[in-house]
Length: 329
Image 1: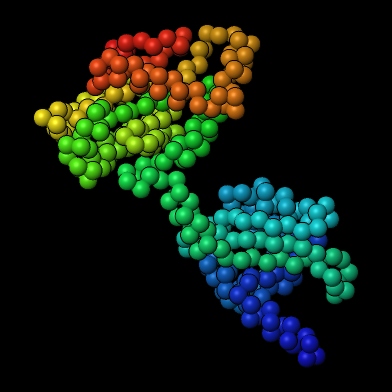
Image 2: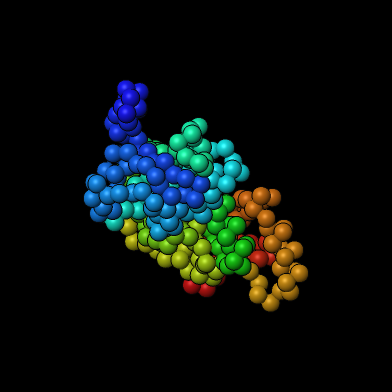
């Protein structure tokens, strides 16, 4: 081995980057020290001979969250369909916390082998990903109540609306407003007002335990509760329970006025009796991209009526677009 080769070998063995060289079939023919060290997380010894092990088989066994994308990208580089491939993926190790890696694969310019060789590198980005997730969570969370903020609500509504249409399932939304909140703030002070909002948020959070549910602060003293796979009648009953729980807090202000909430409810309900053609037409009309705020607007209109009717009550928006008195609860 000449000086240049010794320097190259020393560099590869010193790098924290995990390096492997694979052939056209995806079989490993070289790994550096960092790659071997990473193998320890799988219970392999540091001197494990990686030669001849299929990297594609390693990926298939790993059950990564984006495994199809990962495998497809690698196979396309090996076949010559694309010049290089880079992706981030979640790697589950048997002994450690899940690890995020950036994979990069590209052909090598070398005459060391009869066929084409490829340089594969893995970079551990777990810390960066965790920081990114924390920052993302902060931008989607209301700092006062800890609930989702309006930006998160909009994203969530888009996903749940599409899912409800796709799976022909119910989706309910309620708009919740603290009655006479300005008077409460003026009477008790902003610190006490903030505490009241936090208590209201805590009640709403109890009803958003499923993956398809979300409690969010819409703005000021207004909140939204999204309930997947929940009919209008079920949502109205939940809204009434929430109204009663707020009253049970027994928060009084401005001459012993009781803190209460007004709630408007709207729901997307799939009518199973409709013909397939009629249902398809309805779904087209309810396309989120055309009117993504439909349920929020309907719940807001129902909330307006609840306020006009004297507050401290639940109103629902029916399927014929008429505002009605509350369902029996």
